[in-house]
Image (cartoon, rainbow, N blue to C red; front, side, top):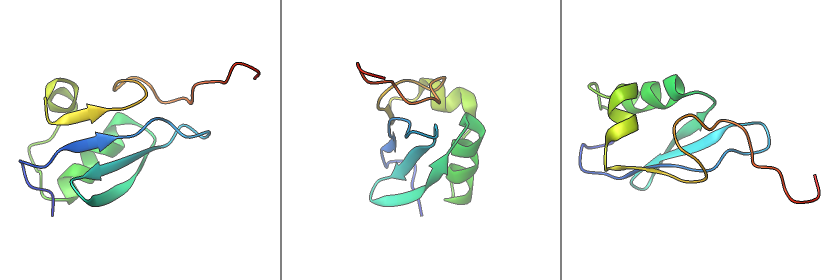
Length: 78
């Protein structure tokens, strides 16, 4: 499903720390760790994806924090 040319977007953490993962137009799942993202990409056909690739690839767009951010940002009044 996911080709090596698609942009992978990891969205900001939700309240429970889960981050939505998309490859192009495809929703791959809700990740709670970097290993979850790797597994989603492998299941989508990117067998060579690993945590090092996720950390350095220009095709990965981290929104709301990088690969080490797995908790939701608190609002000003929390």
